[in-house]
Image 1 (tube, rainbow, N blue to C red):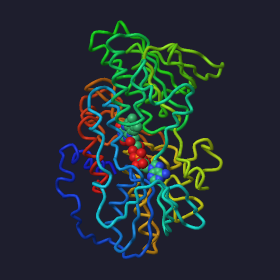
Image 2 (tube, rainbow, N blue to C red):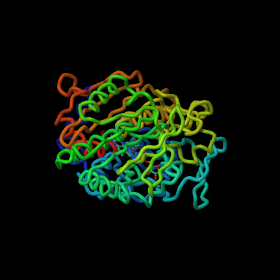
Image 3 (cartoon, helix red, strand yellow):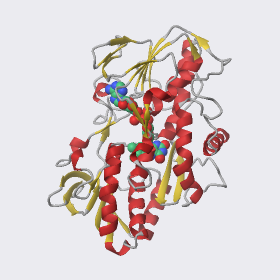
Length: 435
Ligand SMILES: Cc1cc2nc3c(=O)[nH]c(=O)nc-3n(C[C@H](O)[C@H](O)[C@H](O)COP(=O)(O)OP(=O)(O)OC[C@H]3O[C@@H](n4cnc5c(N)ncnc54)[C@H](O)[C@@H]3O)c2cc1C
């Protein structure tokens, strides 16, 4: 696996993936399976698009229907760069349809109802689509309403940022954050208590804004607090310890077990739920990341775990095969999957071939063999030009792609290059199903 990860990253870094194979040109494969199966995929984000491209090559004769109301594809790892003024908002936006192979039907509506017993999906336009196999790849929703006093139209004004909300909001976040790096004051950086996509991103934003203020010569004017939902600053203990040390070196103050519940933009006060009761903290700049949950259509489908993440609704899948534990013709992949790690695009890259393997094997009357090991990767930016390439699995073991070359817990320029330059071509190759 290390070898294939390396090939994946180095090909992408050289920009050769995709250039070698024009989109739409498909090589005939020896392992193609003939079938008349109806396959429905909910969501044309990172996971749904990558899987669609791979399945369209493996299955000859299948009807593949992709359902997604959004016309734009968002390269979300770029949002952290936009919110630090390092990229423009349009850096993350492309057209969904441009990534899809011919012969796939794209219904540009939301899935509004899933009936796993009747094996149907209804869309917001009232169409009912029957499936033999269903892949839930709907990503997650950002529950901004859960933060009292907050609304998205505040972003960019009065020292409020919310970069997760999309490219325009990430751009407006930079407007508020850059004012803070000029004028100084108290910066308050938050993260939610739910599972979240790219748990490194709240830290990246904190480190970058701190670094930018210091580069402007305004380090003496800022005071930064990182409000963490739990006692550990990161889910992997050795990484948590590294972050604690970096915070110490940089003069960033962590406050633990603090969950944002309310902001009062007029007074510039944020209220946190803590084990000791509510606590108010003042700010000049606040970065809001709201709780994250499965979309309602998933939570109401009966496909979610009944005994874990009950407030979040992630799909009940086997953590190694991504196959639903009660409905074997259903899989979930990407952020919506109820597995203990893996809400990153890098995880999608390793989950998608597993779903492909099991789905195609089932159609061919065989058993799939591929397993997902929880691989999750986070190029944790620590300053402009430096990052740590942190990769880990379900056991919290670090699984570096370049052992002995790229040290995972060191702030390196090469790791920065991977995030800043290599990750997007890598991601695009994944979307095309070519990596
Ligand atoms: C700020 C930020 C930084 C990140 N940084 C990194 C990083 O450095 N490295 C990394 O690997 N990952 C990173 N990620 C995470 C990565 O972007 C996600 O894990 C990845 O996009 C998940 O893919 P997905 O297909 O599950 O979801 P998405 O890509 O979000 O796609 C979900 C799709 O489902 C659609 N959908 C939703 N509801 C419905 C419905 N009812 N019916 C039909 N369609 C629906 C949506 O419109 C969307 O197109 C970052 C994310 C953010 C927000």
